[in-house]
Length: 501
Image (cartoon, rainbow, N blue to C red; front, side):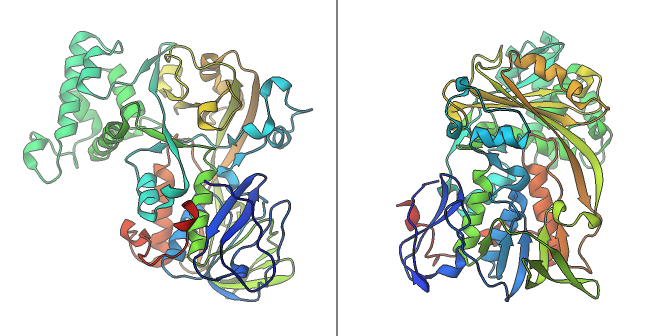
């Protein structure tokens, strides 16, 4: 995202580049071809602060600037709704933020002192709080393309995808050629797995011949594995490294979902070759900022550093939000769980350990980015362990430094110890930042209250479940099924384009 530092002054309207400070040295820019009302942009960075009268009524108020909330805010604005978007924090991203400079990360995790000089400049760091990649052919990339938010972002392909087996890591085979060359399997198993991949690749829901007398809507995945005589090891990396399931519950469910998941993985891999994953330069925090920009372009109003005092209800229905003594009225409210804890329930915990290193992960061919999946059965767990690694090549770390984030669902009273198999792969580690996050799901689905609450980000290393949540909330807010075409920007969109000239 381009970074211009130019501050419009005065009241009324402004023509030119409007710059909104969202973090130190991190700005959103809006190039306007016609006079633009200054009240639409709120300056709430360290240097700028403007207040806006909240004595207005909005179609939708959104609380929290996580990715889920920012995408929904953008969609609502594109559809012509009047949107007010507020966050108690001074930065975008909420739980999905990227923290910069490095000194702020030390403060956030209550580490004593300052980062050592060996870490380089603090501002060269932008560290994600949650470890996730984008599937190249997945739902989030489709949302980015249709809304043209891609023009504000740059991406790199993650260089490799690996799976853990008996203490070692292996490249995930997803093509016929890789299957035959992989050391994960014996020679006879390779040929059976190759036939399985051909079946999945050829499967077409509209062509019964491709089903080979097999009904994927009725037969379980266990049945499909049995059809191709695949052993436990192949089942492990197929279900967990290709279909990306976190547990083995999928084995006794209809195999159609697993087939579609493997096809998504293969199609995503085919887009760029090295792996099916993409990652935005400067960190995942760029994603909510991109959709926030989309919302603002279509008239959405943003307020950061805005304390939320009360969600105002009348007769069981939301009517507004109170902040600093003022009430902004609304017809509907979208928020993350932290803003309305009495309408969510705890459904689990996720442990994440951010590791700073001066070396790539061993046995990966010295790639500067990768994903490693440790199937639960390999380490006697119920849930998989994930490792996402990125580096200075992605503008998120000082030169020569690497960031690896290990994560999983908490199963014991010693969450950090649960990730030991992953941490052993990362040694030596210069610094660790450990977090244990509660996972929440809404108990109020919003039918009567018109309050729509997002789910906490899960332990998966991709955004497909986040996109499922976005589509579910959209359906409940709008009363219609989510349609990607509804996100398309209008042809007479006069904002945004010129800012990238």
